[in-house]
Image (cartoon, rainbow, N blue to C red; front, side):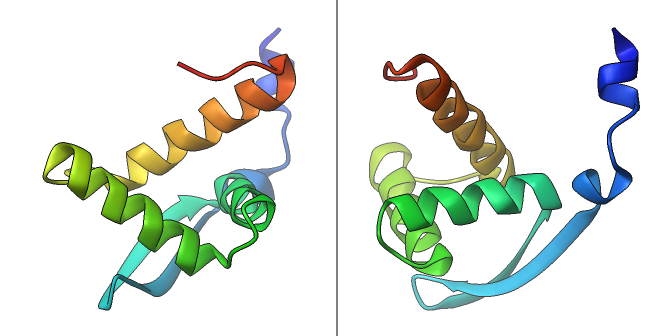
Length: 93
């Protein structure tokens, strides 16, 4: 069982840092390459660029929660929810 996970290509989980602007503020986000690919796919499916998608998501989190204490973790979880929705065809909880 672990061979499926342990045998994956190291390039897929190499961390990548991207510098961008979230609602006008310069920041950097570090995610594994696989998660960046998923974020790029989600943004494309929404018809926006990745920075536009991230800014919109960040704004919505601030509006709903008042803060985004760990935005990078939120992004990883969003990727997993998106993937689950794609695989099952139902809305992720």
